[in-house]
Amino acid sequence: MGVLRRRTAVATRKIASEASEARAVVEDDFHHFRVTVLSRDGHVERTATQSLRTPTMICGQAGQRLTELEGMALDPASASVLQHTDARLQCTHMIDLAGLAVAALSHGTPFRQYDVEVDDKTPDKTRRARLRRDGVLVLEWELDGYAVKGPPPYSGLSLGAGFTGWTQGTLPTDEAEAALVLRRAIFISNGRTVDLDAPGRRTGPFGGCWAWQPERADKALRNVGSTQDFTERPDALLGQDQAWLAFEQTE
Image (cartoon, rainbow, N blue to C red; front, side, top):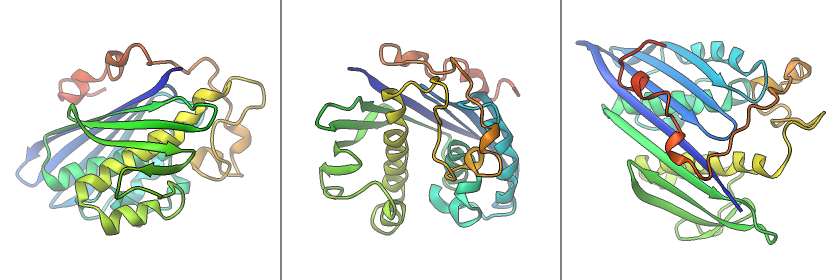
């Protein structure tokens, strides 16, 4: 048995009296994306993306859709970006990063890192998922499929439709953000149980993200051999992103 490891980090800096920059990055077995958000006068001014490792050959092209966020007011809730675009027409991971970047800019948070571990499924579908924020364990869920068995206040909740709204209406802003980061990792962890390089294997939910919309799904060809396994090497995650996060390089 192994574990999905997923690391997400966000760094911000002031670049002028009324302007700031956020850089957000995520890496796991299947993905490695970067998103930059520039803000001015409390609003998103510009976005940029980099796709370093992707499940399909067209995932990176989805970055152009983040321009739909330009002009939105900064908001402390990472899920606020979902009010300004249709998430199904975005790259799931880029829009998540953009939300974290917007929230960090709103809070003025200099740096934040999330480390998630999701145990591989057992035969009875039970397992545990853990999230550390800046090295401190803040969430640990016992799972039965996509249902949270505990602890409260998550006991009995489904991670499916309605979960995002529940977090926004029930939890403090920081915990809601952490819960959504953990939930995303749980969803993608199931990729560890299948051979994504098998001929004809689809790597995403049909209609669920930009790459898998019906009009382009036939072009979402698999990047064969792109999957990695970080079970025994968590320190490798974001290994090539440290200078970028420190604003020491542009690319």
